[in-house]
Structures are given as structure tokens and as C-alpha cells.
Length: 113
Image (tube, rainbow, N blue to C red; front, side, top):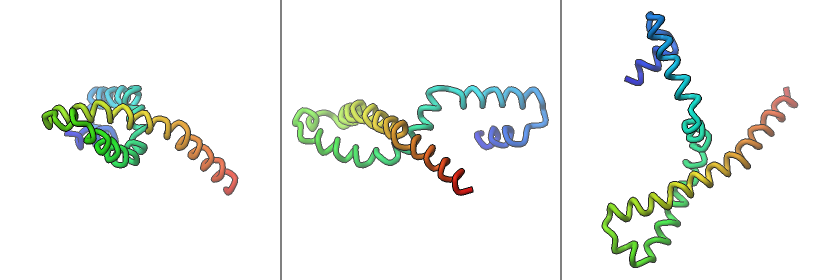
């Protein structure tokens, strides 16, 4: 299904109204603030999630109450704590590390060429 949309976006379907409809859907998704945030923070989430999850689970397993919960409740409790922290750190890394680094790299490339 997704392959169809990818082909239709890149090459068209041959039906102008369908092409316009697919292009409008693509633009709505790409311009969506939530998807932009997820795209901007995805690399930071990739980098930080395992180290942070390891520390968080080590910390939580020291609490008797957490250990006594059912596995499903432990999962949701950990996720409720974990996900906002990971995205906060990833956003801060994007804003204060990635964006200035990308800008600096572009300036360096302009200076070289």
C-alpha cells in the first residue's frame, strides 16, 4: 500500500485528480507539526533511548512497589515515565546541538567551496 503512494508521489498515477489528491495528503502529513517534531527528534531518540532505558529500569527495579506490579502495569508505568524524558532530551539535543552543528557545517562547506 505504501509502495503505491511512494510511486504515485514520485511518478504520478496517470489520473490527474488522483495525483492531486495524493499530493495534498502528502503535503498535509509533511506539514503536520507533530510529524515535524517526530522527524526532528528521531535521531536523538535513537541515540538516547537505550542508555536512558537501562538507567531508568535499574532505578525502577529498586522500588518494591514497581517490582510488585503486573508486567503490563510495569510496562505502562515505565513507558509513561520514559517516553516524555526521552523526547525532551532528544528535543534539547536537536535544538542546542544538532541545529547549530548543521549550521556550522554549512558555513564550513561554503567557506571551503
